[in-house]
Length: 76
Image 1 (cartoon, rainbow, N blue to C red):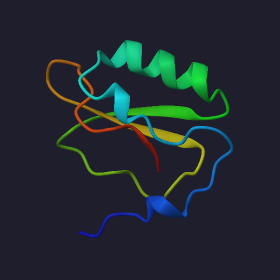
Image 2: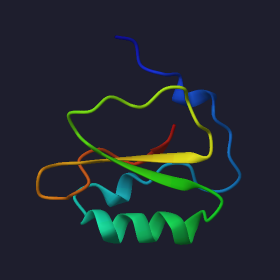
Image 3: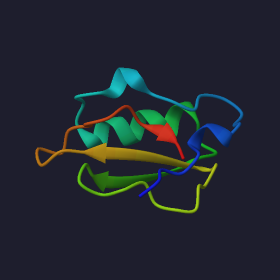
Image 4: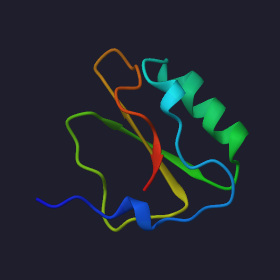
């Protein structure tokens, strides 16, 4: 399986949130929506792949079984 080319996305404003790693998912989603309200958030379990096709208006947030952000959220 090949990963989608997330780096092709050029968005206005913030496009990655490495500082949210380990945060509660609800808090993370709230921060993302506040910092870049033009994007929508897709929350997925860490075991799921990044959905295709790439959507440059979507932030993918991977969480673990404790509802904590497991990877830095990115536009993809």
